[in-house]
Length: 299
Ligand SMILES: NC(=O)c1ccc[n+]([C@@H]2O[C@H](COP(=O)([O-])OP(=O)(O)OC[C@H]3O[C@@H](n4cnc5c(N)ncnc54)[C@H](OP(=O)(O)O)[C@@H]3O)[C@@H](O)[C@H]2O)c1
Image 1: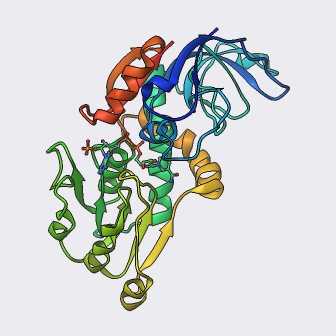
Image 2: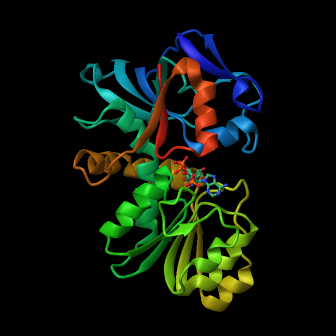
């Protein structure tokens, strides 16, 4: 089968398209003929070495949708599923997966990968934030996949939402280095995904007993929040990640997130699709930040 193998870290050229043995499934796993693969932002950071990645040449990629071609349960044969792997292997024509979610009827494979992970992250973040109607919420990088779903879900919960983006589509332009000064005061919940040392400026914008959910580092740096500022204002800082958030709460939200796509509550946005052979162009597109919506590979 055709697959994309990562050779070390660096630019998009470290991803090579190769012929690889088709994986075999273990008992309990399904074998999936892949129809669509997501290219999320964090994968560009894994590829470049900003996030820790395998030093061995391995099939790259984490988020794929496709048709089940082998399973213990024969009723799964021919069903469309979406899978999220922590150990790679998704940039391929065939994937073996132990964890998968059935894709509701009417959702295309491209829509499934554009929604499955980011919409379930957004839903799990919303459940963790426990927002009440009338609260005000700051969504950073609302032009991104998770940010876009957060805006929709927060508005649905009756919150007043303030957004940032770099493409002119939001209330505040986060490419302005002083953008945090434009955030109105009295924010109850901040969904923090940009990070960096200046994230600390947001503490002063929170209402007393506000909460920060830190879940990303789009700037390449974790956010820095001095504890003194949090104590003085009674702020709750929640780090959202790791096995508990990602492995449990996000996975638990996946089927509900896909149902919200199926019923039209959430709308996946697709920027461009690329054939698997053009994986380098797909990564360059994500890094360029030129598009809006998910970049998708089609084997
Ligand atoms: N904690 C978890 O469980 C979890 C799970 C999945 C992902 N994440 C993290 O969540 C974040 C968002 O992921 P996503 O999949 O929604 O990404 P995405 O769809 O690729 O969107 C990223 C957006 O971030 C903006 N951006 C990129 N670089 C930036 C920078 N240096 N400063 C400010 N904004 C920047 C871009 O917006 P503009 O072009 O408009 O500037 C882009 O639209 C990532 O950091 C990812 O690693 C966390």
